[in-house]
Length: 218
Image (cartoon, rainbow, N blue to C red; front, top):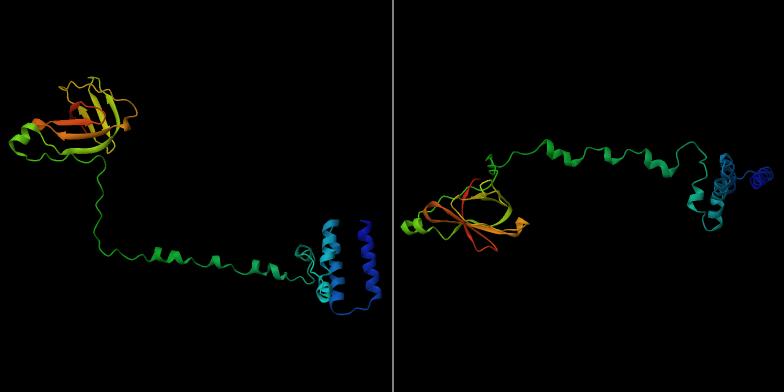
């Protein structure tokens, strides 16, 4: 505090002894006086150093740090130059260009409606006419090919129900005596279903040599 008072006294004495000369000296003295309103001693000292920038520029000395120069209050009430961009209208207020297509969206080239894909598992393919022997012994091409097993359970009658990854649900026929020993997780198994004899279907499961008689319930 004593240093600050002494500095102000020196400035006041110099202001009285040195004739007012328009130029860097007057700018330095005026800037130092405007720092007097700062209450924090450290900030006031930095402002005091920053006020000497006009003379430092004339003498070719290294400039005062920008942080010190910015502490010097402006001589006029006008906003400082570095604050001017804050008062200019920002370009972000202009209507965004990307909104225009939303209000003038052209009609599609054709008005054909896209058919919605049916929900749920794929339909069971129609049995192919393979002649007398195909009807008796069944077909060799699978109606469900390499589908991952999603889950399986046993019903009250002891027959298993298998749900595949595509949503198909197959149940073991009542007359089938196969007893699967599948383990969890169910997704480790891959399932194929073939046309069997006399309108039946046969299920083959990976890592299981048993051929099960099944029918689809979904």
